[in-house]
Image (cartoon, rainbow, N blue to C red; front, side, top):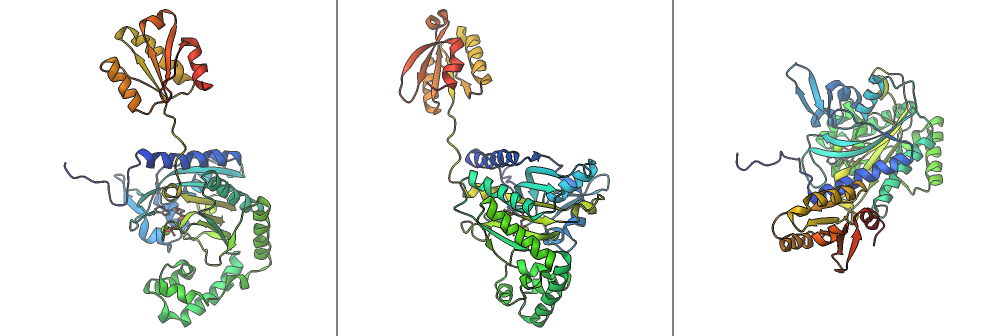
Length: 414
Ligand code: ATP
Ligand code: MG
């Protein structure tokens, strides 16, 4: 079994990368809790219909990117490509559609068959939030402000720009869509071949195209802003007023349409120019109809998802690591006392390891090399007095401390 590699587009999280990843998740969990969110975890695979019904039969995710397989019982299952559909499924199957609103935070691996590159993987990880059962623009502004607060807590607000757009309601979109299809038909030959296919199936996706050819044509396409009806305008104004009230800076970008097909009104992306083509780090919008696709009542909602790998790449550094404490028994007789001391320190939340191999000199050398902050030395004489030696490695300052005092001394800083 030589030469085995991780599957293409997957990666291990180890060392600094694992710490960055955990830091993103911990920060998001902490900040979303301050907005009243609760964490849910749904399965990593679902009945394929959870995604095929909701993402739309023509979306790139459903047509090209899903990991779908038949299990031994003949069920069609799919590794989740995103979190929103699964959260909506969970809302319905857990009978929670009558207890709205629900504010849900989630995180975990997602799977999409894509061409791997920097910031783009086949197994990647997302943090996400869904605010279900709410239909006013202030909720959208608050949900976006929560995303912004996470980026701020990660120290990233200087690296990202919030771009917002409105997709209006169905009525506005239908009228605009007709104008758009008319425009693209008139310029059919100038479209990329991929976009020519989208023209009949899903013309709005052309707006999201990454091809130079299409982007040039988009300059003069009918602007949705000119097609908004009264209700859509009211919502769009409310969103922008709300963002201002929450103190979240934004720019308007009519090209933001979102990759998935179930959005209305609000669409937004936090983008950066530091990650090349993979510039979107956290994105989302308002959606309707997802919960009803799962067999529940019509439930308006707003949500977003952030790419943990991309956020982790942007982080300057993870918070200084706690280098901890090494407990060293000077001889085998002191082993039980060393264990008791180590456990008492772990119980107050300190990071503690024991060095028990080799000579006392070797134990000490390894402790110094480990980068630990303190060493607790257990020797005969001190133990007889109920004490230990506490040495700060940086300064080499050493003093005798009574064992019961040790947790307090080490947690309050010396
Ligand atoms: P993109 O346009 O980059 O393909 P998307 O519109 O498909 O993004 P969403 O479905 O909105 O992405 O997912 C939310 C976030 O998840 C993205 O903004 C990005 O940060 C991250 N993401 C999406 N796909 C991948 C991937 N294959 N690898 C790593 N991160 C990803
Ligand atoms: Mg994509």
